[in-house]
Amino acid sequence: MRVTSGVLRSWGIVVLLAADSAPAVLAADTPGCDRDSIDRASWRLTTRGVALAVTQPRHDWWDSFDLGKYADDLADLNLAVTRTAERALEIDPRNMMGHSILARQYLVLSEPEQADAAWGVVMGAGGQVVWTSTYYDVDGREWFFTAVGREGLRLYQWKQIAAVEKRGTAGILEFPGPDDERFWMASGGCIDAAVVPHAFVPWSDVREIRAGNWVLWFELTKPVNLTSGRNGKTKRLDELKVAFHGRSGTLEVYKPVGEEEPALRGRGPAAYNDLVRRTIVKFVDPERRIALPALKTGVGW
Image (tube, rainbow, N blue to C red):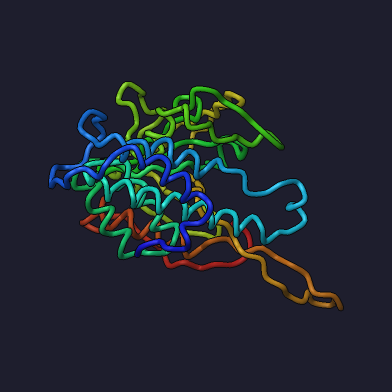
């Protein structure tokens, strides 16, 4: 896939960031996170460029009355981030952040073949694919970083990664600006090695992954402790109910039984969650030890 939707509003950002450097000579080196080994323009695209694409204002207060606007805005954001990472790799394919971002984004955009190619590069180089995520049994208003690697899941509290914690409406976390380079490196799979994971779950401790409308359930053989960075409360869990951010749900019109007027109900991105879990196990569980129960969508999670 090559994203070509006029590259949307954020393409102007990409051009400005890349204009001060000529494309690097392509090399077959293994991708990595060493700043000195990656072309400057490519590096800036996967840090500052992605930050600007994510944090660009896309709606105002009046848009709250247009429920479909949020889905359109998220699609705009995902396309802009994807194209930014693609351009970064055109400049320098040694940039691990570009591959890791695309491994995540191609799943968000429902492009499984492109996702498989990106995952192959990342996993082959010993890298990781990172999502911001919500663990609902811990704190529905707190976000974690979930890093998926060959060895297992590494979980980081938001405050471990972000330089400053800022919350907006209803206490929802806000993404930092482009100056927080360490944050955007982490979101691209290059987490500072000095940061110790808040929790680690080896794949040998995962016996099943179920997919629902909004979340994935990782069934564990050994419990893990997770603490909310927002309120300090700790939960000991033998099941992780987690939403990997990136896709919104859809609204559908239906007629309630016994009612004259139609109503709206939301459906979560179940197909996205199913694609995420199947892609993960393809690369981390070649023995097919982890069970994947059939996807059965309905109301609720």
